Amino acid sequence: MANQSADIEEGTTFTPKFDRDGLVTAVVTDAGSGELLMVAHMNAEALRRTVESGEAWYYSRSRQALWKKGESSGHVQRVKELRVDCDQDALWLKVEQAGPGACHTGRRSCFYRAVPLGKSGAVTLEFRDGDKTFDPKAVYRQS
Amino acid sequence: MANQSADIEEGTTFTPKFDRDGLVTAVVTDAGSGELLMVAHMNAEALRRTVESGEAWYYSRSRQALWKKGESSGHVQRVKELRVDCDQDALWLKVEQAGPGACHTGRRSCFYRAVPLGKSGAVTLEFRDGDKTFDPKAVYRQS
Image (tube, rainbow over all chains, first blue to last red; front, side, top):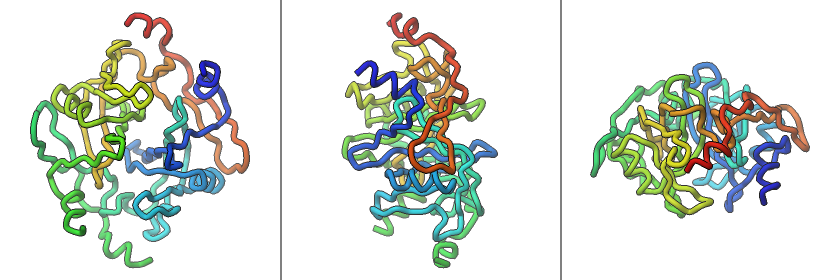
């Protein structure tokens, strides 16, 4: 086990560790600003297509389907760099985001609400950078 | 369902969606540089302690245990901002990372290897920012 762990962490063989649903976590940031855009999941086929094409493919857990980012909206993600973490169960995509945003709610990033800290009990979220940059109804109807 | 989805995505009630193992994904970036440091998981108790204390707690899937970041290494993470994504199944922690790094392998970030793009078949990882910033054997022996 120790040697296997060393290979995974210190080696150059790409052996992504898919979970029991066959998925790895994909963290997606804007290659220019560094902003966190979204968190998604990839199965082996989505990962293969992403590596080969340089455009981001994911696997939708809710729709149980392979999914090319931007196939409906046109908001394609061109991958500038793809990294893997120490234990190879998470990926980091630095992307050029086409169009006004990555989030299906019509915002640039999916992370538009903050959780106030230092409190206990029920929590009220606070909107941050919550302005919509596009109308999702208009964008997703085009497909 | 539509109304429920709208509440989750557009409302101010914090209703984190834990998976069937009781976990949400936590993406951790450096509050200063924006660098992606690590991806971890939180159960409800880790999240509660993080929100209340302003220091990052996680749940280790391999050790099946609640875990305060830095409890062994001293590399505590002070949370400057906590955000939740549209469907509330992922969290973003912007942290001040104490000490020389976040990764248990002795590096600042867990994402120190790149996957070359535009290729098919077997992939050889390329080290990026892979220099160790501390000796993990020394650091973790102190605990």
